Length: 68
Image 1 (spheres, rainbow, N blue to C red):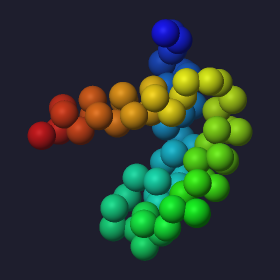
Image 2: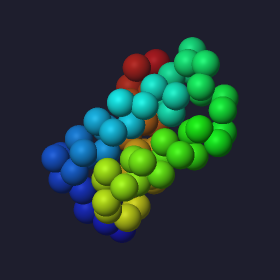
Image 3: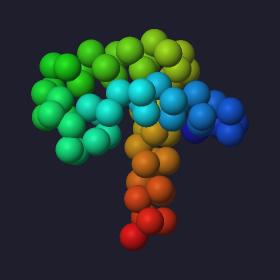
C-alpha cells in the first residue's frame, strides 16, 4: 500500500479536474472511450507515481459518499 501526502493527492486532482470528460457525466466526451483513454494516459504522465488511479477512485468515492 502506497502512502500519499496531501500534496500528492492534490497532484492527482488537478490533472483530472482539467479533463472534464473523465468525471463530468454531462460532458459530450464522457462516453467516448478512446478519448478518455488518451486523457487517462495524460494524467498518468502528469502524476508520475504508480497507484494513482486507485487512489483517485478512492478519493472520488469518499467525496461522493460525503455529499449524499
